[in-house]
Image (cartoon, rainbow, N blue to C red):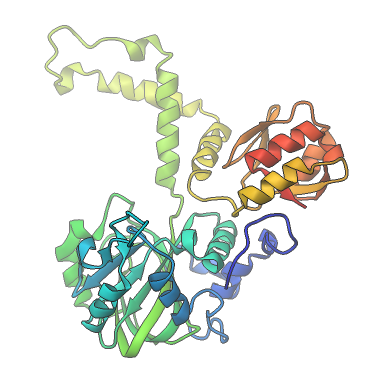
Length: 407
C-alpha cells in the first residue's frame, strides 16, 4: 500500500492517458458512457470490478489512517442522524512534542462509531497514495478535476439524509453492503453555489416519490450519479465502507464567466463604455443606458477569440489538481549529479505547455529559450530526453522547479 513519489523510476507515472484505464474500470465501455450517460443520468454497475477495490482502500487502511497517521481536520468529519458533529467531539492534542490540538482521536472515534456515527475521511486524493494515483489518472481520463472521500458507516445506520451534490460522483463499494435510494433531481445540473440546503422542502418532497434506482451495493459494485440526483444510503448487516469520487465538472457557465471577463476587459478600452451616467442619476431604468451598454457588450462578445477563452480556462484548470508527487531529496540528488547523459522526463500530471520561450505548468514556468527546440518538443510529447538535448542549465532549472524527474 505504500507509495513512492514520482522520482523518475519506471512505473510511477501511471498508464497512458489515452487508454482511460481508471474510467474504464468504473464504467466499462468509455465511449458508450460518454455518449449516453455522462451528465445525463445514473449508471449502476454490479461487479464493475469483481476483484473489488482493496487496491485503493481497505478496513485496515482506514484504521491506519485514523490511528497512526496523525490526521487533522479538515481531513475528517463525523456525522450522526444527518448532522455533522463538532470537531472537538473527535479530536484531541497530539501529546508531548506535538502541540497540535486538533489531531484525530482514535479513542473518541471508536466510541462515536460504536454509538452509530459515520466517519468521513475527506480529501483522500491528498493523503492516501493509492487513491492519489487513481484520482490523478481518473481526472486525466475525464478532463475534469476529481476528489475522493471515504464513508465508513456502522451497522444499520446512515450518515446523511436525502440530499444532492453539486458535483458528479462515482460510488465505489469497498466493504460491506449498503442500500442506496436514488431520486430524480429537483434542480438538474446545479452549480456550486446552488446547494441542496437552499431547497430543503423540494428535496424532502422529491425523496418521498418513487425512486429512480433502489439497490444494494456490494464490494466491487459502482454507481455513477450526475450532480443534482438525490441520494441516501443505509448500512446493512455489518459496517460498510465506500469511496465517493467527486467530479467537479467544467461547465458552460464557467465558459460564460471567462467570456464575460474578457468582454469587460475589452469594454474597458471603449470610451463610450467608460462614460459617466447623467448628472443626478437615480439609477432608474430610463437613465442607466442599459440598451447601449448591452449593445457594447454584445459587440465585445462577438469579437472575442474562442482561443483566448480556452487559454483562460486552461489556466484555471492548473489550480484544480496537483502534479504527481515528487521527493525533494530525490530532486536534489538528481540536480547535483546532473551530467550530459542524465535522462529526464516530464513529471506526470504537470499540465505543461509551451508558451513563447517558456514552458508553463501547474508547478512552475521555466524559460527554455536557450534549449534546443527538438529536445523541448520531445520532452513535452512525453519522451525521455537526455540533459545534453536540453542543455545542462535548462535541465537543472527544470529539476529544481519540479517540472522534470529522472527518466
